[in-house]
Length: 522
Image (spheres, rainbow, N blue to C red):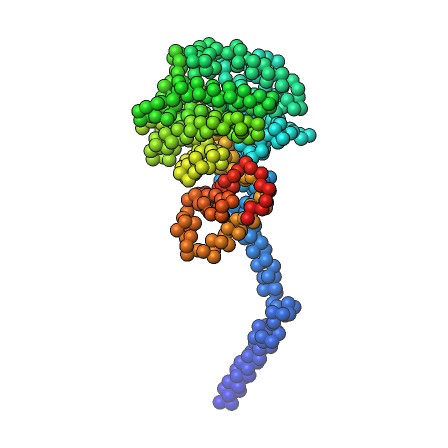
């Protein structure tokens, strides 16, 4: 019995000893965790090692999220403090540089090279194109700096300076003339280009075959008129006239446009206003309403119109011609809008024929024309043209891949083929032109800082009268006109950027676009 008691007592003592051992084994841990007075947020040294580095991880996580959000999710803000910064920060919503690379690499024919030059110049140096607010500073060609423009650097070695024309082209009369404007611009630094441009002009006026009505033939071997020609030689004639201070050259450019229109335009029926692609005796003659051909004609007339309006000596003389060009361009755009019924959102390769596929090249060029004319003549080309161009742009951009190709595009060498191509040199240039024309909001009159102040004052006026102006000022995808009094109006359009989810201000322009402001806007 005594032995059993002793054993039990020994067991209890052992247990007690074990309990004491347990308590003694973890005193430091229990004190640090259970005592909140020793762990304070203000005293970093009191923090347990397991959480001491947590703030650093939080900071790194926040920084990563901020960088990822700013560079990959959201688009950088548009800086409109200067035209240069606006151009640099503009979001085209498609791989513009890839498209430019493709245009440069694929262009080998004279018209492709001339069109690619025009597109790159509009993209990189819009202030030196005829679509700028001052294309002829002090009525002379825009100056070249120590380094010539990127577009001129690219086209420099592609222009022939020792021949009758600017490119060795045995097929076309007008296509080599598409290099005439860059040749004149290069002549400021390299005089041999002036001689080459003079010979090109002489060939057009004195050697080239003429159609029965006196229009300069598009082809060498046969007297034939193609709508393509209007983007080739009339812009050169007009630019040459401004360069040499010869108003009669601008009048000649307009007269040639009229002669082409007399032959190629559909004057009645469902295709009224559209242009046939070509007219002549050869097997290549095409009397269909080719969308790209209508784009060639409309955009070429737009360039001539911009040259006339941008060269000061022509304004008092060529006002009637400018008005008629607005009419001619409007006829094409109106007819294209009527024929715009394809479910893809693209214009058909032949506008009036439902059996043809929706196509990106003609759609891009006609949309670019609408954007340009909305800036050149906002009274004639207003809300409906901008909204239509927005829809065509969005339809085209939905087809652009990561390499910058817009497709399906018509085969530029087989315009009647029902097999579209994935790589079109001129199609890439048209895509660039459309993007550059959409960016026209950066190319506005006057001081941009002053314009921003006007916008801020306008917004304040809206807020103060929100209940009265809600119906006029708050409709998405509309062209709004804000009444700023009897002195001028600020017109702008808010366009939805479908890919980035932003709503960039598409066009900001004073209604008195090309007149210098001598007093504050408000």
